[in-house]
Length: 408
Image (cartoon, rainbow, N blue to C red; front, side, top):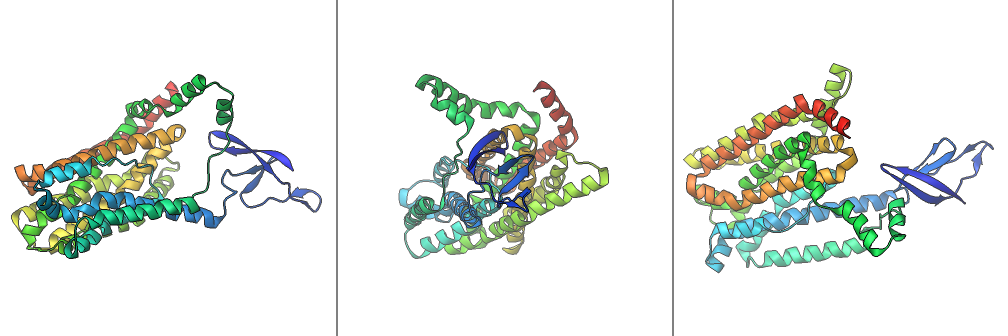
């Protein structure tokens, strides 16, 4: 047995690995997850996990993402019943929902799809519950699913923490020195400092404008469409969430491929790659499809035109546009902030979900004050402003990155 140095991004790990018998007396054999690097046998940090274990972790994290998003939208079908129970207003209920504390990390792959099942099916499930029983059952269902997730965590999630030189260094320090070192790594102020980077700030604000649009659409669906469309039960209004939810799911499948296709197109056309090429597809969606469908939805509902079909189509287009554009923005942040990808992701999601909470809390007071048409107009102009920031990043992002590298 020999001690082998294992290389990973920004870290160096030491693992004990077995040398395989040499093939024909000269070439060492390598096991899956290991590659030859000169005279060293280099193993990936996660090669000790089987494919089944990795897939189980992915499915588990997607399930937790479903619970996180479902917990914020499943009560939307029960807002009117909760109002009657506590003799309060929809505004108060939605403010309490907006202030529900949840931390969302970078969402990719199956995790992103898991988070999108929640908005699609959470209100439908809660609509069935409220139609045939008490709205309180919604929270018992959520508690049960969360308990299931905790149980799965015990069996599915394996320890992934690597013994790094930094951890070994902490063990040799005193309590005060170790706490000081940890604070440098965990200091939340660093997350806010990264927002001084122009490309991160612009793309985060563009992503936040989409989140504002999403939650200002989802939150008041039953409050607005029930009286206008003559819907009488929570189940009927819950079915309306299939339109944006289906759009979210389809967009999550299309968005990544669209982003990759655009990058390849510009690489072939120009002969080399720029990180900002990935943003071009999201600019079209943010500048045309999303604000257009939002305006059409808002004013047709406001004027009582188009029956139930036109608002449903508009919500579906909104859903596709939002989640088709999001992978480009999210991946761009990971590309240009590789040395601080974790903190950059935290900065992005802080801005995004701060505006989501603002939309959840403010949309019904805005609708009561100025109507759904003008509320949709404000949301559309916010998305248009976000598309302008994306366009600015496409044209100036390269020079911004150059300045960052020179300052570093």
